Image (cartoon, rainbow, N blue to C red; front, top):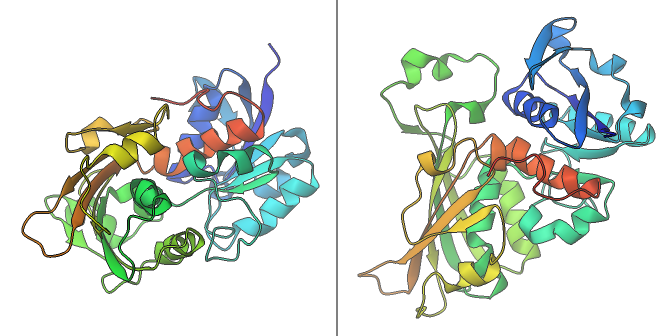
Length: 319
């Protein structure tokens, strides 16, 4: 069977490594190259096969049907352009082309919302991990006009340390993280806010967003608890999610509270919602969980890549 050539730029980071492993095990694709400028010439095994890392400048972009760019924010956009010039389709995992970050005209690959745009694209901007869990949790309410006008949506989301990247930092060392739990970017300063606000605006949502991320002493996973004032009480609280996501292979709507154990190493988002009692304004508490490296990054990127290549959307993805 002929396999499509796929390359990964930025394979030394956590998302890049995850992508390499997914591509290497893909039934219709082969990992043609992986760039890692700090590890040029070194070898790694993906899918049981050894591969030698190359410099990005030496990557044979023209041989690939699809290139994933997992390069750092601010460095990715020129390589996206280079890959397109070489004839490859591209999924960009950086923030460079996302809404609110200069990505005008580039389809935003929140796949369950934008798969028709993704199918016809040459370049797709892959959402960030926090925006993925937040927006997929809110989407059924947003599309039905159920968020109260002028409301404040409050998101508290806790992520494993791989979400901070592979660059060594003291505050991410084991002795600093273990047996601890702390917020960061307090005061609505996280860089993903621009992306989330831009998408909310595109969907016509007139609401403020307060987002506070937290660092969990685990390797991977995100658990988000979202407080949403709504226009009126719902008879069936989960009905918007069940209707919106009926038949979606990677979204699990449940009456149970999601946990990280439900989702790690899987390309899924698991969602529930409950009414808040004892408040004057009708309010929902939405809880959602994802693996930040899979559905929040590499898995969703491959989901988008499958669509770009005309393949079955679920192919090669862990469910």
